[in-house]
Structure formats: structure tokens, C-alpha cells
Image (cartoon, rainbow, N blue to C red):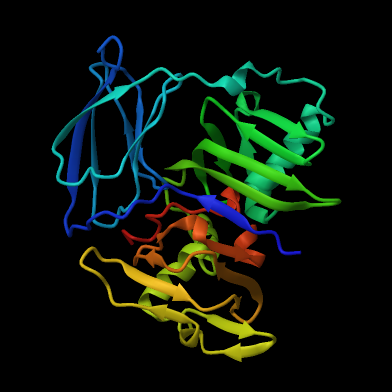
Length: 331
């Protein structure tokens, strides 16, 4: 059975502009109206972020390439997501204190699986089993709460604090705010992995080592991000992709309908039926959709992400194999 991954990044469709813009704002407590310091403000799944100063103020610059949601995150408060930030010069954001009923659950209750075993499952299916995934280290496992349902054989996880991961292979520090995380456990392996959240990348490779850059390039090639960009540009075969159906090579454009770019820079895509994908004749994946259509942009974003399912190599990619959505855009 091919395990499919539903990885939800909170992309919203917004108007693209052709120049850099700066968004300034202030973050305050919704109840006291007092400024909040060191609040994290970032564009989801990118390396672009900042924190508020002692007056609760922040300033963040972005370009037309950034299509993701602005996330405002502070421990103990509910996160705020803003998609309509373009053409806004200044904004005041009020954060409300969070109430999480899950934290009232007895964490170490006897649910049929030890915490050590639950953490092993979490690491494997969150970080991934690839070389990149195995190079990752979670720095704050104590913050992760995990419950196992013995009857349904499902494992769920959550955390008040962002999960901090150091990816030694790709040289990123990743901050991941969990929204949902669930594993359905089969006899030997997970049969389904569904997780969603927002992600901020910190580049640890300040000196731009050739080894690290090569590793990132190798990870990007054949990834979902690479595939979506190639689909947008209609250069799938030039980028190394071959498609199959029942063991026979097929023309992908007989299955994908890719419509003209709309005024916002997006293309609408439909897929007639499930297709096998081969990258460089070796790495095998598959794609299928659950909706009528989905939208893509030239940066590798697609929406709604829950309607596009990948299996095989692309479906097995986890946090350890993830690059920021602005990867390669400034090179």
C-alpha cells in the first residue's frame, strides 16, 4: 500500500505585485491593550520572518514571490493568520490568550503505548525516513503531547509551543506550529499520515557551503515543489519527468488540463485520472486529485492542498525533506 501524505501549508490566493513591499505593524494583548515583545511574525513556509520589539512593533519586507499567509505566533496566545496583507502599510494585531482543552488530558495515561514508543512513531512520520529526515533532531520533545487510541490504532500529537527541528543535512532550523497531526498505524507501518501546520525556516548555512547547496538542490529536484513549478511552466519532460499509466508511458498533457494564467498569476489545473510519475526514469511517485480542479503558481504553490494527493516518493517526503517555498527564487 502506498502511504499518502496530506501536508497542509496555509497558502491563500492573493494578488502578486512586481516589487518589494514592507509591512509594518504592532502586536498587542487583546485584553490589556499592552504591547507584546518577541512575538514571531513570519510568512508561512519561508525564511522570511522577524520578531516584535519592546513596543510590540515589527517591520517585514516581502516580494511578489511570496504567496503564503502571514503568521503571528506567540506562546500562550492564539495564532493569527493574515492573507490580505498586500497594500497594507500599517496594521495593529490583537492576540487573545489561548485555551487548549487537550492540555488538560493526563499526558502519561496508560493508553496502550509508552511515551517512548509514541515518540518513535512521531519522529519517524514527522521527520521522515530519508537521509535528510534521519539527520533531523527535535530540540524540544518535552513540549510534544501525544495520545494513542488503541481501538482505532490512531496516534495524535499537539504542542503549545512550536516544534523546533534542526536539519543538519540541509542546514535549516525549522519552527513548526502544529495544527493537526494524526497517524493511522497498520501492522508494521503507518497506513496514513495527516498533518498540518505553519512553518518558518532559519537558514543556518550563512557561508553558503557548496556541500549544503548541492544537498538542497538534490532535495529540490524531484520534489513536489519542483514538480508543481514544472507543471506551471509546462516543461515537465524538460525537467526530467516521465508519466505512466498501467505500465505504459503516456503524454501528461493528455491527462492534465492547464488553463491560461489568470489576472492574479494563477493557473487552474484539472487531472483526468491518477498518474504514475517518474523522475529521471528512477524515482517513482503518483498523483491523484479529490476535487474537480486546483490552482498553481510559478513558485510551486498549489491550492487547495488537501485536494491533491501524492504517493510514492513524493508522498513519503516529510519535514526533513522540505525546503522553504522561497527556495531558489533569489538565485
